[in-house]
Length: 322
Image (cartoon, rainbow, N blue to C red; front, side, top):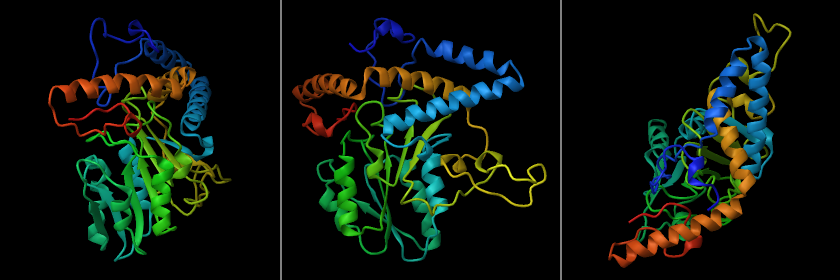
């Protein structure tokens, strides 16, 4: 056991099987929320404390994703990050996007809307509930602008190797962008975000945090051209005419994609959760989850149920689907 059950709210004698939907809350989150309100009560001084928590949380998120803090943005949820890319690219009629048929709706719907601009959405069909990299590569051609995939499928539990996924995409078209939804991987297994161009993750599942904040990584080298679809005071550097601006200068880091104040209270909770997760270590968590999920997988299989999740624990994370 990596975290004692009494460190979670309301578990008691409960066996919690739905962290892929909503994880239980850490008792220590109550202290994190109390710190937020105590800081907020300080008036103008509060902003410095809030921003210090913002910076600390961004540093931890970067460690989790094995990237630089200046490549991290905090948006309201993973859907915001996906839509930011969908609206930020300069699409042309005849372009195409490749998705899989076992993706969560939010990983598909933003691309379907691009059909109005003449963009084709190509769907990779699963074979016995699995998405093969060869089948994915077959859908990629010279007009494929982006491939959108989950590192771990919410629907089947299949886990993709981020490096292998990126190599399969770029072997067909080195200009094709790779967007990965790591919502069901982050906090459970390693997320080597630097292999992709964009990685998004919600935080209220395996990251033990709450709604209202999502982590977005943008590859600094390959995504430098992406313009934020929305602007606000938080996304720009202060200029000489800041009080009545007649010009703007975007921030150089991921803050350019955050038009307004982040949801600070959610960041206090996320910062606390990431501190706990990183202290335990993702390799330790991954090994523990692999052991538990194997017990669940085998138990369900022994009951005669059809298993959608792969039999190989290395091809799964925490989701066991049947």
